[in-house]
Image 1 (spheres, rainbow, N blue to C red):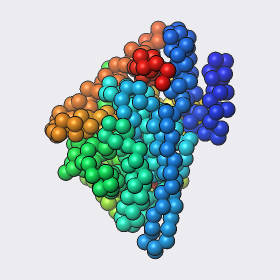
Image 2 (cartoon, protein in one colour):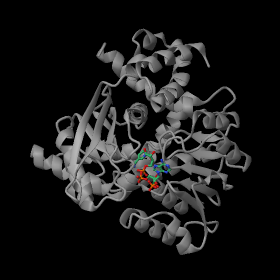
Image 3 (cartoon, protein in one colour):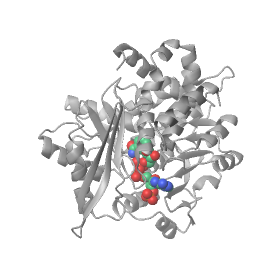
Image 4 (cartoon, rainbow, N blue to C red):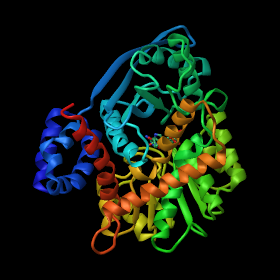
Length: 446
Ligand code: NDP
């Protein structure tokens, strides 16, 4: 490791003990940024990197709620307000039993650079709870969301901090939280994004992250004069991002052959067409079932406890969770001919896997660039709420598409080396950093 990165990381680790995911995210960014900052000493003198690695504010709270048996349950609630240099804090809420400070700080840190890349005026934040919506009744989820928002509403606002969804937080949860915010604060404002269309949501928001990751992959393919036509694609996850990534790959002429959940993956060599995708959406969003049922329904293979990376493909779209693709799996992917990876999920590849991609010079779009479409359309939802107008599907999709092209252009600008290879990791990290850093310099030591 570069000794300057090592020295910087020693401080981060000492200050943030036991936060492994946070260390991982900061180190990846530091490796890109420290050489750049050495060439641009104004950022070094102002300690911009040290400052962006420290949250502006961390809110931790108790979330008590009553289950259906009348018993009190207690969860932890969090909101990390990471950086507001270029706009109000913006980033999702995650409800999953693995949620802890380290995971939310890594997500909030990534969010700052991602939001900057979108070209929209949004700072970065993230939050959530160790609550597990799986196996809970609708009423239990509602009571939990209401209790969570009863505390969170003291800290957020349409011009302060605007949460959205993430793992375990979809339209249902956003609806319950919005209702509670409105009830307590007595104001109908765009304090959350990912809202239902009837009450201030934007068209294309549910689709945005998955569509965006595919648009980004399409831009990467174009740099080699290629397209999705006829490409075999493996997808992990079967939630919001995976579903709409699959839909867009189909539209562009590719074939998705896998999806997964936390229990295993299915392999459908004939491809998941629109009818099969509708089945997955019903299974996951309404029945809240397991992906194994797809294999029973369509008579294909189900691999219990496994991830889809051993399946031969041209393009891989990891759309489930962090660290779901390791070094060995990356080597298998590349050996099988995969040459495009676009991350719908946040930090799905381990640092060793990323090294494999870079060594093999494949087209690798890291999450903070490739999955920025979700927060970009959240930004567009905020604009529509402020204007008290709704744009059409075509208009929002066209803006999303343009933003993904712009993010790709930024990555190319900051990430292209002298051999012509685009290192999208460097491109996204430096491209996202510059705008935030300039704003921080202008605002002084805050
Ligand atoms: P969902 O909750 O809709 O879906 C998550 C999917 O990932 C499910 O299939 C779930 O399986 C699977 N999964 C979750 N945790 C694990 C795990 N530990 N191991 C294996 N599989 C797992 O979430 P989203 O689709 O919204 O989010 C997916 C990823 O995309 C996350 O990394 C998120 O941060 C990122 N992202 C999401 C955005 C959005 O707009 N929603 C925006 C940008 C990034 P199971 O059903 O078994 O839990």
